[in-house]
Figure 1 (cartoon, rainbow, N blue to C red):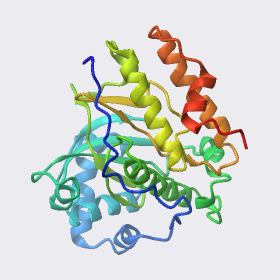
Figure 2 (figure 1 turned 90 degrees about the horizontal axis):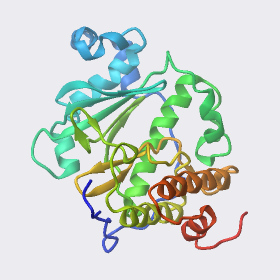
Figure 3 (figure 1 turned 135 degrees about the vertical axis):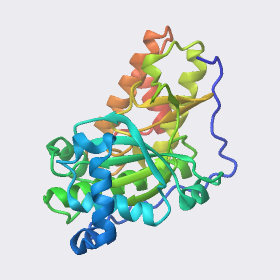
Length: 295
């Protein structure tokens, strides 16, 4: 690993987002497309189902998921699909080439590489999400319907990524969201998958720790707690450390936000203690919160 790490400059950073942003789980254009099932969509659906990278998942993707992928292609966010990057209980992540809209968002050349995160509504058990959903004001009134919970979760992840970027935290830039599919900047790919902090030799743990704790502080100042931060949710991209997996991040007003933050601090401090640093959980917590009292 490189001995130095770049930190996002906050000189031009926008103010944090509105922590009371509303999450809309109404039917999207993808649902309408899936219901109408016109000839072009049907042909697209069959091509995707027959593609090698999607064959295993075809049985658990509902028609509206194919509708979401179709809509993202039509809107220029995706040009071509690549292979799987990672698989999980709730979601798979695929590489893809972005279209004109993705290039505009990322301010780059045509066909930038993007990541497509597909949450699997039919095959996933989202009971573990309840601790992050209950008490989050953005989820008031959503209810217990699985498809609504998943759509809300994906939109929350998009909103969390946007807010983190505005606060000066290096995260993948969100590009588009449609139903249960999130398109974002593809970062840190090396031999098919991003290298996590846990998987590399940290030559300069002091600098790495300073960057991570500063990003934790900026997240908290923006009204967010990651909720699952560890060396497994921080990846390398060149000389940058990038925070990923913000789907479960909650606002500081969530009733469990303090417990989540203390757990994040323990995980991060434990990792850097193993790197030889003298780091205490409480000291990191005080730095992140500015020394504020619990409650």
